Length: 347
Image 1 (cartoon, rainbow, N blue to C red):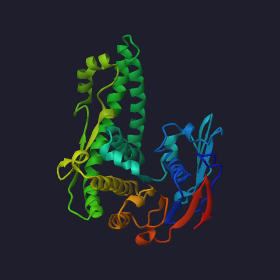
Image 2: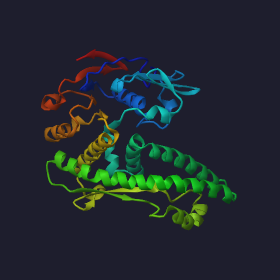
Image 3: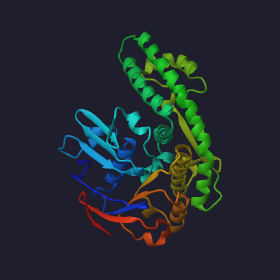
Image 4: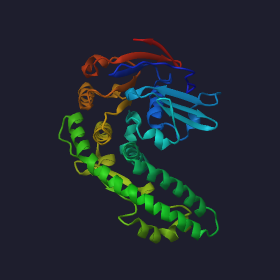
């Protein structure tokens, strides 16, 4: 394996899922992260695959059998090797085409409400890339073209022809992203509003609004921003600056919602994500829930579990099980103790 702090680890999860119990910094979150990489080739905690390898190792390998299909991800200095049912997949897209779906829930989800726009864009992107191949393709090509344009803007000498060539790529794929994000937000809004009412137990109207940074016409916005981008030496319009506005009772949630309300909004957004992934993706996602139950009162915890698809597998990390007797909805879930990068026992 050689993933994070684990030299090796072998866990067999019952259909309901697994609870991983242990002190902080023992490797619980890394197990969830490995699952996310196996299923979606994505880590919520790292931008580069190479940083996931255990210290001193040259790479890592993960294998598992989600949804009856044996999947393998191996990362070496030469790059990624991807297999499904022992068949090599030539690209990330080929690997992900028939892969599973994931919802990640953690305490960092408060950044969806309090944090900068990047957190909310990542939220939309993580949905889009899982259910829409055209979104995944445009998201990848837009990011590559954006990096190239920014490098040219920083070059310190005129590179207008090259910048214009990359802008055509940005306009083409940025428009796809803008249209797809608008559709996603329209679908997420009623789902998030329903989840907010369920988890809070109150009539707390939650609304979502997609705010494209460039307005409706990306080409015209780039033209108008050209002088400013040359002066600032960076691209300032496009989907990489989009925003998702969150309002509770019609007021900006970041400014007027209490901390308890903000935590509930974060849960509602992730529950809405799961509902949308299931309806559009055709299968229930795996829910990776990182140390979120300790901070929830029993009523919100049970409301959260009741809102999850009953047949969806849940992987949960926690430092203690004091809350478990108050949460009967978890059913026949497996329990393991993680300590020092090892799975020491089944509880």
